[in-house]
Image (cartoon, rainbow over all chains, first blue to last red; front, side, top):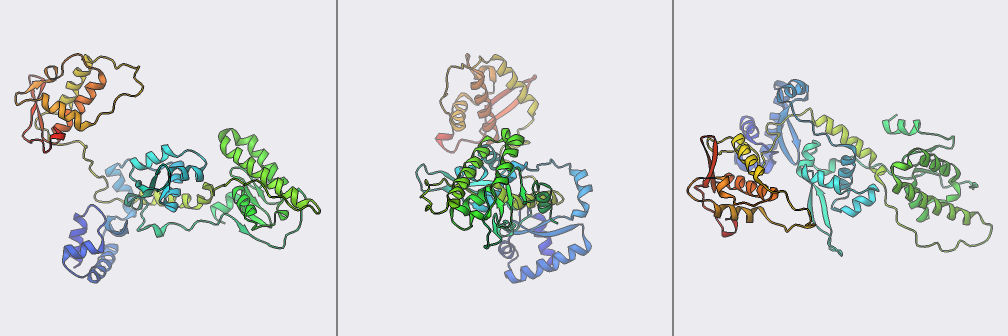
Length: 176
Length: 255
């Protein structure tokens, strides 16, 4: 099973879900889960590759220990997002589906450029239209977003800090 | 101490625990959070405003205005509106017996991006970590990505043909504010009809006069036809010739 999984995951260029692996290997999903666990452990001990759960599936990738030589070979183009793009992306991720006007309202600045950039990078996508006057477009995050931030699903997003904490109800009057 | 708490600690400017700017972060016994959050909780009567010292907040706001307001006039104005509201509310509270009148319908201030600060920081970290992972197929091939199979001809040959086409083109007229929209598939139809089984150079295919814009459209459509197999290109004596390809158009609209 582990060898078959290795072959399929090596050939797959996108994260493979347990269901798709089970269909490909014609076995039960539970068996796939066990096989993945076994295969992942074997890789961790003996290989420069590792098995990661990402964007709703499993995929092979290089172990970060060897990131430097791999990067030297591949010379990947840095595509790090600017802070303003990250801010816009965070707002979409937490409040999706969300309209452009709502993003503007939260950020306090116009976000059309940022959204365009995020659409081009396929980190956000149009997910529909709100049934309000003007039928504004709604935006949400994509699988690419999960993949780019090495998340399995949106539930892994960090919990937002509370903006306000009421510390003491026993307040003393104070002049302006 | 987390990086966030450290940043807040460094930004403290008053023993009252007020931090500024930007954004205006308020820390006192009664409240901890941003100005917009304070505004929201005061409006919702979730806090006794008498416990919140407004003078340091005003001082912090003036400092903010002096140091960074020019960078973000909109948020400065929003902060001013919020402060004015808080001051008016507190002023009424301090009056001995008069009942506080109904205020004008206050504006809504949404939580600002400050609330997402922790998430943004985390995403930055994850982004850096993710850069250490390499997947077998990191790059997805786009539909329009070169290289594609175009026979013996090279992109340089095509570029040369395009340059010679552009050299003949007339400049676009600038008077039109909104040029008519056209689709690439329509242009592909025009180009496909201009092509024949006999190979022709671009000079023969495009009849003068034409503008640079039209030349670009023409060439894009030609490239797309080559990509889908409805046109082919060949080089003879250094010149590029185009003819209809083996692939017939599927729908009348695409020809």
